[in-house]
Image (tube, rainbow, N blue to C red):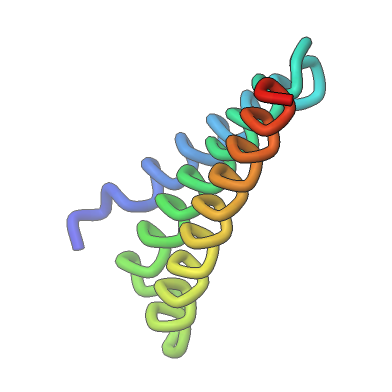
Length: 91
């Protein structure tokens, strides 16, 4: 490992705090959904970095599996929001 995993993970966590502020103050539901998608992608990045850093003996495989589940949930949430938003626009 290069030792760069921990600083990058901290940077991404600070990015998550900025997304939390955007989600709380977002003027529209689309802004809030984009913040939620940012949570998903940034969370996957943090989990992958921590898995690569080898946190604990059991953690790398568990963190990678959790990152995969989080990526799938973020994708499903984005598709569900788009279908609901476009469904209202067509009606």
